[in-house]
Amino acid sequence: MTDRFIQDIRLITKESILSEVYLQARKCLIDYLAVTISGACSFSGKALDYIQTMGHGNENATVIGLNCKTDMQTASLINGMNAHVLELDDGHRQGALHVGSTIFSALLAIAEKENLSSEDFLYGAIIGYEVTVRLACAIQPGNKLRGYHATGTCGTVGATMGIAAALGFDEEQMKSALSAAVTCAAGVLEMQEDNADYKPLNVGRAAMDAVAAAYLGKARFAPPFDAIGGKRGFLKVMTDEPKTEYLTYFDSTSPLAITQIYMKTYAACRHTHPTIEAALTLREKYDIYPSDITSIEVEAYKLAVAGHDHTDILGISSAKMSLPFSVALALCTGSAGMEAYNGTNMTDKTILSLAKRVTVTENEELSSLVPRKRASILHLTMGDGTKLTCRVDYPKGEPENPLTDEEIEEKFVSLVTASGFTKERCKDIIHTIQQPSFELPTLLDKLK
Image 1 (tube, rainbow, N blue to C red):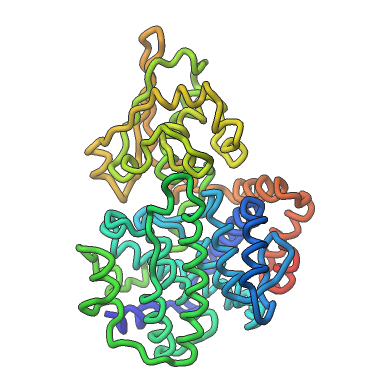
Image 2: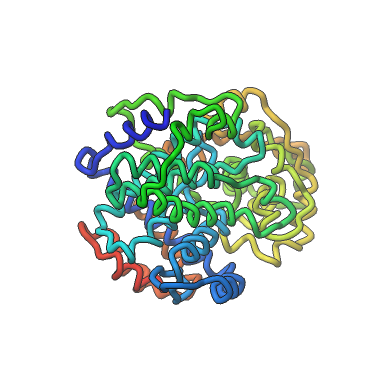
C-alpha cells in the first residue's frame, strides 16, 4: 500500500497541475502567513525563551514575525505553533484537521537552506495538502474517536512528503522519508482541554518532525516494506476502519485536496462556526438584546458536542473550544474574530451568564450528514415566548461558500496590522506572493 500510494502521488507532476491550483496555493500561503504573523504575538515571550534555550547550529531558518533566525527544526516548531494558536488556520472538513499550518511551516523552514524556487515551493505545498488530506480521510472519524489529533498524525506525513516533492526526491527517498514520518506521527486531543497551551504543539511538532523525516529519507535510510498498510502500520494504529480507497485509487479528474479546504473567519474551533454564523445572522436580522433571551438550544452533529459543550471557561483557549461561550459571545458582541476572544470578554458577566443558558444536543440527522456537511441549528427563545431559529450548513470559508480574493486579503491586513505591520507593508507582502515567480528569501525578509 505504501508503494502504491507513493506512485499515485508521483503522478501529480508540476506540469500536470492546473494554473488555478497554483493560484489556490498562493492564497493558502497568504492565509497561513496572516495567522502565523499574528499568532507570533501570542507566544512571543515563551517562544523566544525556547529559541534561546534550544536553538542551536546554523541560523538558516526564519521565525516568522519574531525578527530572528534559528535552526530549521526549531523554526518549523515555533512557526507551526504560532500558525495554530489563534484557531484561524485553514483545514479540511472530511479529514477533520488543519492543513496549511503544518505544511507551510515545514516547507518554509527548509526553503532558505535549499534555495527553493517559488515553483518548487508551491508544488511541495500542493503535494503536502494532498497527502495530508488523503491520509486523514482514510482514518477519520476513527482517529479522532481514539483521541488523536489528525493535524499531528497526518500532518507529519503530509509535510514530509511536501518537502520530498519540493526537493525532487526519487521514489526510494520518498518511501524512506514517508516511513520515518509514519513512526513520528503523533498528537492527542487532550491537549485542547483545560485552557492548555499545547494544542498548537501538535502542529509545530508535526512540522519539526517532518523536517527530520525528510532529511532521513534524503539520506536513504532503509524503510520497512509497508509503513502505511503493514500489520502494525499507520492504518492499523490510527483507526479501526480504514478507508483504503483514499490511498490506493487515483483519479486524475478529481479536484486536488488544496482546492477543497476551508478558510476560517471566526477565531474558534471549526465545530463552533455554523452556530456562530447562525447567531450572527439572527442578531443582524432581529433586534436582539441578551437580556431578552431566556434559553438557547443548539442542535449539532455528534463530533461538535463532546468536548465543545462546556460552559466553565478557564481562559481564551478554553473559550475557543466552547460552543456555548462562542454563541453567547457572538450574540452579545456581534463578533467572533480574534479581537473578540480577549480577557475582558472571558470574564464578562453578561456573556458568561448567557453561555450558561445554552444547551447543546446531538441531532442525528445532522450527524448523518457528516462529513458532507457540518451543520447546526440554533434556537433562541425570547422572554415574550417568541422562538427564533437559524440553520447553517456551510459557514463562510467552506469550499461551497469560499472567501473571495478580497476577503482573504482583508483577513490578512486585519490580522497583520494588529501585529504592528503597516497596511503598506501588508500589501507589499501580498503583492510579492502574487508575482508569477517570487524569491523566497525576499519574501521571508519581509516577514521578520
